[in-house]
Structures are given as structure tokens and as C-alpha cells.
Length: 166
Image (cartoon, rainbow, N blue to C red; front, side, top):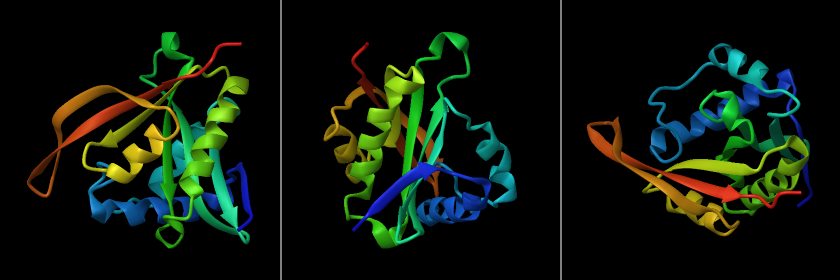
């Protein structure tokens, strides 16, 4: 299986949103509780830039997953810290695509002046936690019962990776 990881272009947005929307019903990967529209994600898409890219992973010219690097907390002192988000199309889950996207982002980070990667993961999302742990992330925080969905409370863990400085 040949995987091509590249920067997303606006024509990819519908596929990116479709993959994101697949995760909403599971209550595993996002605190969004309703399907989002392509239009509602346009500003989010355009907020990505050279130093905070949105990436897509293609298999046989089909977008199978995506990763985004987003500013953390929106304050200039955190310029070297980003939130990493990864979403995989349900048809491609369990095939190692998430591992390849995380590894790609770790390798890319130093060229973007990123020294800290953060992952915000629901505590019950064992697959995502294992993915991050397997790449050296450790738990940096725990926010108990912070999200409420379908009358259930969910905890959020913060996973971090400090990258070697040049």
C-alpha cells in the first residue's frame, strides 16, 4: 500500500470534512456532537499555513486520512507548541496510516520550529492513546469529566512529546 502525504488544498476540504464527520457518532475522537458542514470548516482550513499545515494522506489517489497542526492556546509565547490532530477514514483504519501520519508530523515539526506536540484525546479512546504512546508521547494532563455528550461525562487527556532541539 503506497501512501502519499501532502499538503491539503481547498479541493480536499469535502473529503477532510467527510472523514471528520465519520468520527462524530462514536464519541471517541471529537467533542462535536453534530455533523459539520464544509462551509463551517472553511475558516479553519484557511487558518492553516506554511508553519501550521493541514496534511492529507492518499492511497491510490483517494484521501484516506488527514493530520493538522494547530496553534496551541493562541498566545505568542506558545509559538513552538502545536496541537496535532489525526483522523483516518473508517475504510482505512487499522492499516497503519495513523502511525505514518504521526511519524511524518514528528519528522516535519523541527523544520516548522515546533518543539512540542500535543494531542488532546478522550481518556476512553484507547486506540489513539496507544498510537501516541507508541511514538513517545506521555500523558501531560488529565481533565476529568470535562465533556458531556449524550448525558455522559467524558475525561480528556493531554498527551505531549518534547522534540529534540537543534
